[in-house]
Image (cartoon, rainbow, N blue to C red; front, side):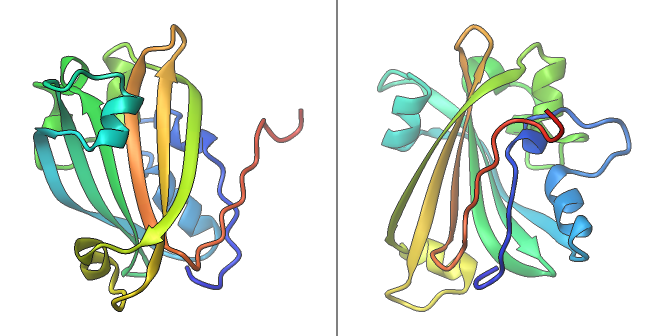
Length: 181
């Protein structure tokens, strides 16, 4: 999406999907006349990176469930998205399995009794690591943006931490609140 003006809202990514409804990214891309998709690269239990461990308020020995996806726009990689869930929330659920989750993670979490009501996002920049360059098709020395999105339930329980990595040419615009209010 480098060079494209792309205004994205977080709210649709936190709302459970209706049966048969496509995922939020596919819908967002389609509204712009584009084709959104994703490829699942990894799912299962892992040790959390430090930033995720801190965001989810985990101890040094607690592990997480990861779902690592390569986000595509018109069949080209535009983002690496790693979503992490505490094992007590996602362990033993389809989130821990290397397959598509009908309705997506947010829909499943809602069915399990976890609804995101607060989001905290932190954006930073860095040089792309070798694995990030490989997945995103970037040359050595490329910069990337890292967006860490923490989703909390109404009682403040951290239910998901997503670390999104995108080329630095991406333009991020945040819109808070709902239209028409």
